[in-house]
View 1 (cartoon, helix red, strand yellow):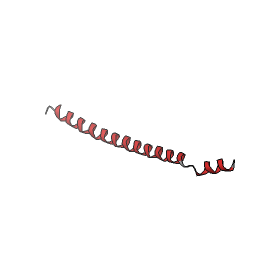
View 2: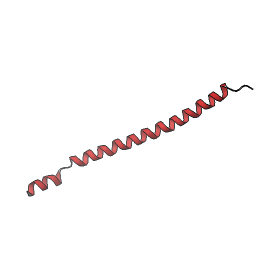
View 3: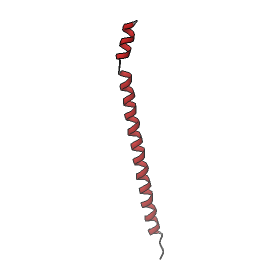
View 4: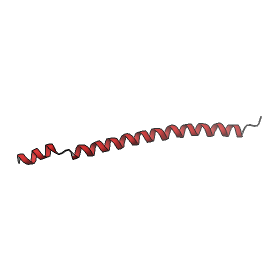
Length: 57
């Protein structure tokens, strides 16, 4: 029984999976933030262009 508990304590495969999960979550947050920022910038540019095209002065 002691050997099973000792082997369980030394096993780090679960910790590695958690680390990979955290890395994947951070990358996902970075991608979502970047896409949101880029989308807002593109929306502003398209609205500016549309306003210039519709200008009748």
